[in-house]
Image 1 (cartoon, rainbow, N blue to C red):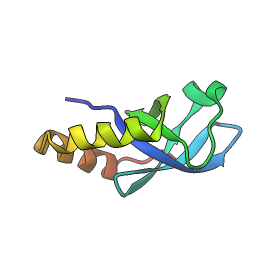
Image 2: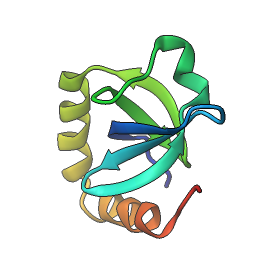
Image 3: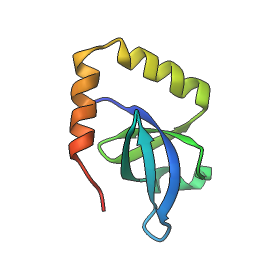
Image 4: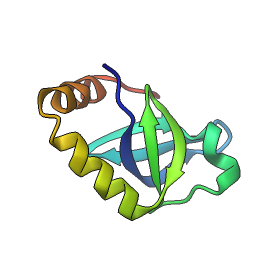
Length: 90
């Protein structure tokens, strides 16, 4: 199962290629924000991430509610975090 997981944008690391450094439950990874750049992405913003891409911009309350629901899923959530931890976009 693949999940969309909320992450908080830490910085834009490659503006030309729309790559941002995002914190996803303590895992920091570079993800593409190309699909949401038109919404205005900046450090501190929350995005919903799926397979290395920010799919939508969400507010902080929605991010925390989603994280809480995902954590209740147990192994499905922790397995997804393990996959995220081993992935990398550079």
